[in-house]
Image (cartoon, rainbow, N blue to C red; front, side, top):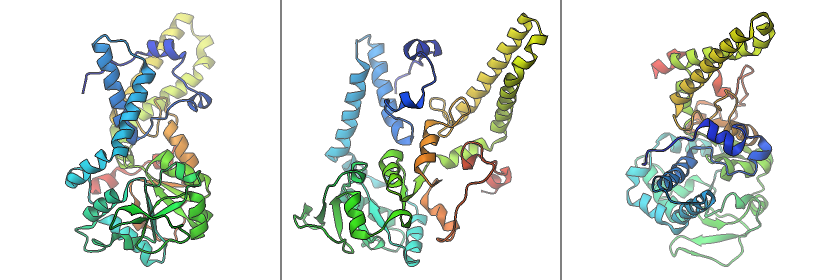
Length: 366
């Protein structure tokens, strides 16, 4: 990875006029705000740095377009899937609790469906690898699900009217017959939400959809009236960090300085101008220092997932509020609750529910 040159605050203001971007302005920008975007962001940054180091002229929009097209090609050509399946131990993390969770739901009479953009060969290879040590459903993982849909083309799936196609597992071909019911053990390609609802008769809050991609997985189902669960893999790490003594100290200092700055102009007339400006500079410098300290505890480049540098909710948090009814780090966390349990938001939340302080003894026990 190339050593990157950080864009200065002055340069950002010179280009954009401000470091603050309103939501109306943000609607016209590409959203790179979750863990899936890290590789794309790093690749764009590396390409730009290469052009800068080589003193080559470039158009930033072309860099973004070419990187995006390259990533799309790797996904659509099958190169990514072939590479992962060639060495599954390197890329897949086995989780014995997930089959247990799915089996529990099925035993409780819940209907399960799998909706993925990946081709069947990749899903099949991945599921076989993940379940090979569990002793259940290893050769017939499809028995876990009432409906299996591959190559769904999310998020287009939620708004299009594409028909479902029956996929022949043995031949690897698509049938031309119309799909008007979902048969057990079968696999279907493409389709759309409208047809899915017509065939299954599963509507509104009867359905709870688990997904780990904000826009491909959660926005469409949320607008369709389904309940949604956001799987946020980095959540556990962030909870641990924000409950360390070091982070809590910096957070307390930051909020104290914020409060002092809010009251500053009330007492400023009592001081001479020079003293006031000097004190204001000291408070602002200390506030910036606290912000940097907290940011670097999460990620020196991107900061926290749920918080902006200002201490307010990030764009990611904003969209989670809108598109997710529940969020957690992994699906099997629901094993701690009854399938009929009602989940409620704590009354004393700051930004997101997980920002409620957790006793440090809990982490020591783990």
